[in-house]
Length: 297
Image 1 (cartoon, rainbow, N blue to C red):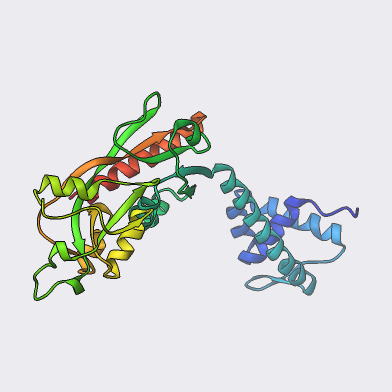
Image 2: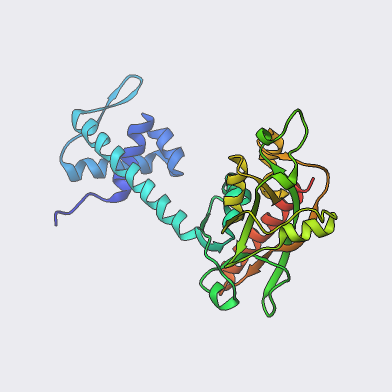
């Protein structure tokens, strides 16, 4: 391999060529003008050709100097980018978080730009697998789980409860009068093969004994129920947290001021396995707390 000129000499020449002055180059490199001049002379001796000639207002590149400057511009620029990439990658944190499907699409996704702005060094790997036990959750660093109580024997913190409201598409209304519930299709959410008893609980809580909760359409996720409601397929009991943009825009209309809390809620579970990951998981937990607090106002 052919021996290259010293890197310090190449660097000194590159800065002189960029700034057009030995004095400015010395200041930029935090050395004296004489030290810069010696490095440039060393490089010229190594190449056997002059790189500068003096003019009345300073120095000017020779043709060899110009060609070398162009090559070093690309070389040093690429090297700086490579070092920056390596340094940043060393400090990046890759965190796996599993969340419920509707929470991911309706609540978390609209807020992720704020998270990325606040924590640009954290790369989130977001999944929506059905995780029903701590053993299943060990494949991740943290979880948001949908349950009626905190998980035992693990760091588990409550984020928020459901707050159900009854909604439909505006096309089902007539002159600001909501549709007659007994004449509408009820939309249900499945929990495995069984329905979540939201309609039964709603009917009992608000004393709607004339409504039969059994007929209707069944969906595996709340997101599917919301989309069906948006298409005018029927009436749904939906967690208000997941449809605030639609309520605000009028894409969905709430029947009345009645609501129903729970019984499920969203819980943050920390299953990180080492201290470095745990520190970032705590940041994610605190950010989620803050977002929940902001959304409740």
